Image (tube, rainbow, N blue to C red; front, top):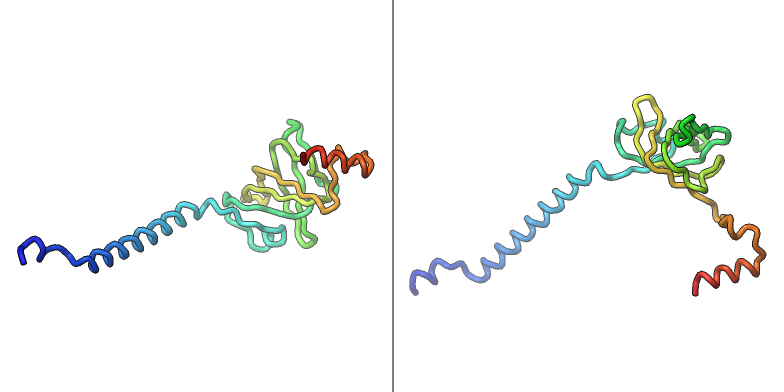
Length: 157
């Protein structure tokens, strides 16, 4: 044997080193991804959960529930609204500035994405209005069954 072949690791040891290196790289990537995304996750709360155990102020969360009747108040700027989201057990005041979805009405479901403030008000960045299984777009409400069928067939062609 010459000097060069005696110093080279065996193929078996080279494969083992590559496998160990790959595993270490995967674990490191998973740790880095978890660390980077730790503040990006949006947790979902209902009003009774937020009242019972509120998230830290400034933490991104989602609040889901029903918009209470008579609670929607538009401020003088015409863009900011205040309303209350409830679930039957608790109520959470919400403040939102922006364009409100068409389906956003009193006594309907809503999911608000945003952050709790120290004063107990939820400051929403985005509103997602929910509808029930009987929802019909405004354009189709005045149509007969045959007209609805024709409109749907026209859009699917």
